[in-house]
Length: 230
Image (spheres, rainbow, N blue to C red):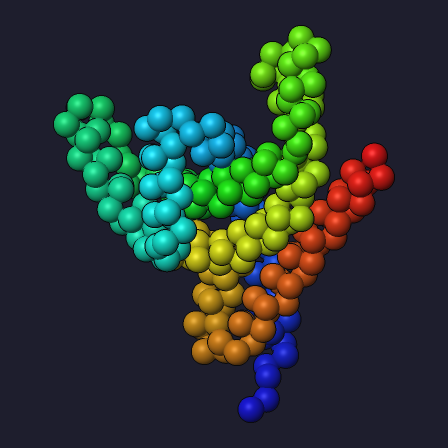
């Protein structure tokens, strides 16, 4: 079977134009999930009553259920519940009119928070406890000690895992097409449907994700080498 190279090139360019959407979902999800993941990590480390249990249940649910199921819950069930709630309050907000990318941000942020919490927890536990004791002995408060002493060291320890996690998140965003988000995968599939050139479209998707993930890994490697020198 011969590949339609002209279609493949045209579809590649159209799908590449959707790279900003994939990057947007990844970056926004990480920005939202990072503070939530950090709080979940602290709840687990300090074993805060009730919150530790809730954090454990949340993390177990996210890690134990398929991403597709989480997308269906957020995109199919949650809007109906929110719409009924807003109507009961007489707010007149049309939940179904929200852009699909908002649901993508929500589902990938909630999913990422669980994964990041375990990365942050392991990184924080890697830092010697004596660092905190020394900071407190110098008169620092716990938040200040975290900001100036603990977090910079923990960040260095977490970088390799953060790199792997970010690459995985980028690949998982390919499921955003389920929520009608026009990302790389969605655009390539739409192009393929016109002439049933699915093999060429999937090769385009493969090439774009390889390139995008390669750039992200390169950036993390550079950051890791720079911080290691410091």
